[in-house]
Image (cartoon, rainbow, N blue to C red):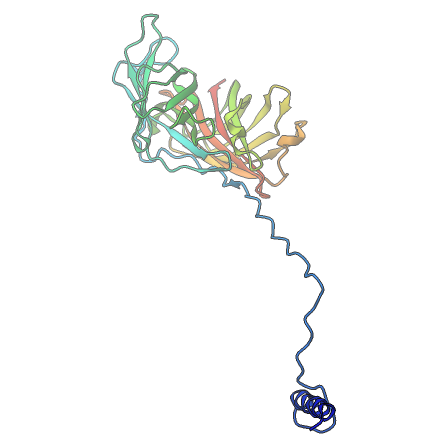
Length: 339
């Protein structure tokens, strides 16, 4: 065989194999079923999804409660916090609303009962107190109405900021379990306590007004920065009207301010039941409000407290307010003396 014939035969055989593989057995030269040529384009890069931004949590303060603590009842010979301090060993239960606050969350804290025990006065004659919250392991020693105890066995610190009328104590406390960590959780409560009026000491008819200059206190908690509540609280005035015949208590908390910041006036509308008072709070007209602390007009809350003194000479309660849009809430105290 000549070399030219061999080359011609090999070429013909190669063409046959290729056509058989590409035509699928048909004789028409179809390319159906062919393997596509690899793409030479560069795939677009995949951008990973951005991590979700954490959302701060704000749950409105719970209505105040004594959490099972028994009230200390006033008698005709009851001492007072102005001129005749209670004797050593006197125990006073708190009515309070407490929040558990961190850098990203603020929510009600269920901590059971909290009590004050009267101790001997210090060398300067200042009343000293033991503040106990068993559920948190808190027990201070020799704490004044306004002071700090940083010697707790737990390593935490308690800030106490209470004021007094004759028979009523009212204000706030703060417990920080880890004093070394600026961002650790804080328990902050607003509370009233003292010598509550016996049911028989509350009038059954007539009416009375109660007033307190600077006796309304409140902290505003904002979802955008929950720890705002740990700053200075708003201070204002308390004006109440008790109608003992109808069993109603109404009034207004006004002039609430913290430095240059202003808060809404707050309306109170509730009922008298024995020595207890309870009802609802709402936004009242009359205040020019700092925009950062403006609440929606339909914001509402609660108040819970009692009359204090042998003959209902005083009234004190813890109150709350919550914006329905979830951006802010408030809780505090008010107190007033019969006029």
